[in-house]
Length: 99
Image 1: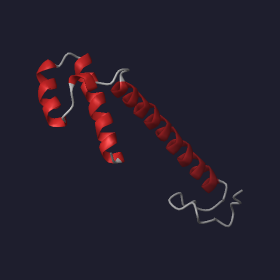
Image 2 (image 1 turned 45 degrees about the vertical axis):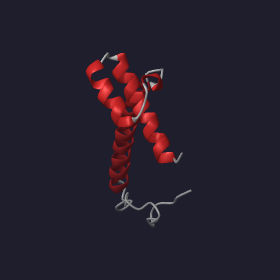
Image 3 (image 1 turned 90 degrees about the vertical axis):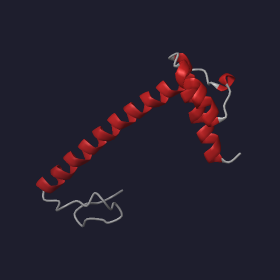
Image 4 (image 1 turned 60 degrees about the horizontal axis):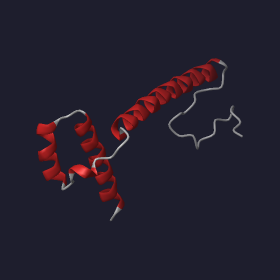
């Protein structure tokens, strides 16, 4: 089985488990037909909620890092370090020493 199919199956099983846990009986049968899954294939352990929680945490970390980067850029410009190109970190600004 290729990785894309395996990933799709894992996601579908997590969705099925979520629908079963929420007792969405009118949605389960059509979903089973569309995915060729069986009711026994539902994963255990609230996979969908765990993945969603991880996404929320990661999004928060990204927003925090973006804010820190913006602040550092502003600080560098205030200290006379010139402009900082945050889109291409391979370029070295003459006033900045990278280690």
